Length: 565
Image 1 (cartoon, rainbow, N blue to C red):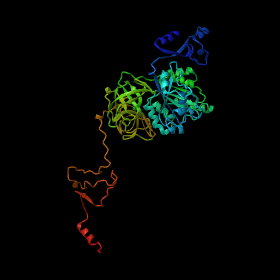
Image 2 (image 1 turned 60 degrees about the vertical axis):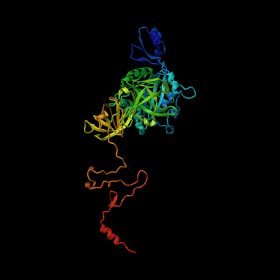
Image 3 (image 1 turned 180 degrees about the vertical axis):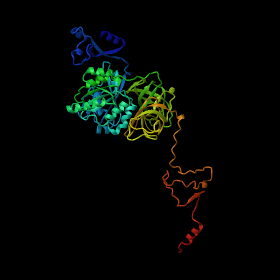
């Protein structure tokens, strides 16, 4: 143990003991046992024949502007306590039972009044080198993000998502666009697995995001109701659709075992906490401290950054925020921004970079950041656009193919069916123009070719997508992207103020078609507001003259039949 600590000191890393267990037994010494509280020398003296195994957390000392970042999406049914738990974790205070801890997370006035999250919120929880929580109130409110990031070696970014059914589109965008590493499913012990809980669990499973469950409000829930909720939750996680291995966290030994094996996506830890009494909150914080990012993109790849939010900051200009997918972006780099509605990319320089409101000089793959752009307006940017390196030679595509699995559909899906496609930060309606089967029903899998309805998008092969429309839900991945030169351009819309009729024989006589060229002219209110008078029935406009259909004899009789004075 002393050798390990000396080696860590030489390489500039912090070393902390997590647990101590006997190599002869399968069970480890928990925090309440005598073996964990006493030193290894005392244990060896009490029983010389017993060998002990210890787990250590080694975290390297890094610069204050660079820290480890892990993104955790918080989902669950409405009134499950998602925002309240984040307020308790990030502010270092307990809740009063009325949701007072969640007020700092709300972004809009109507969210404070109703108590329901309707947008994608963000908050951070910092840990130092020894695993201690940095977010501690100094008596004058919670710490700002700048102070937390400077003191932290690891930062957990919580993505607070909406739980109400009418905000499902926003929740899906948070799960696909913000690209979380893990998903924290919140379940109210008094309400059970109801409402959107199964919906959010299925979404996380479809996107291959590891899930751990937090059961809240155990201080106010009767014991029999809590037992039924845990039994139902355990049955759902073991079902054929989930195939998870639920583990109830009771001590620190369970935390270490589940955190080290959590990336296998089979283990599902279940925490039972209370935001009012603080029961088992230390176990949840320890678990979050031990989580590591699932994958670290290579820094030598071409840069690619997806845009999730757009801001207009006074004195700074247009600011875009999002996730760095791969590569490295430095200050004053020139990147390609696009695609716009025409599918084109424009070159923009990076004026400044911030990570969690902390100014930095570069950002690497897997990190979230915000860029200030030069000579660009906010109305020129939309969610779903990207900042990419010119070496990639990007292009926007109208059509793409994907392997799709239909999770649920009331009837059948066929060609020309339209639904909303969620792919990373892209949200747009797409139509099915071809598939290898005549019709799709619930549980079917097929190769489908889509075409965007409004404008082209920038996509990559291999990324996950969610295809939904009402109760219809399908998931899959992109297998092929078609270049715009391979697909016909989308036809332009007809001018609403142009005449509806056009002569079939453009080169011939207009009268040969049997209908006058101007007969299809629209009448009614013009764009300027003046009203055009409709001619009499039977009138024909040719060469600017009104030729009556009635004969001259009839008009003469009409004149003669008029009464004379």
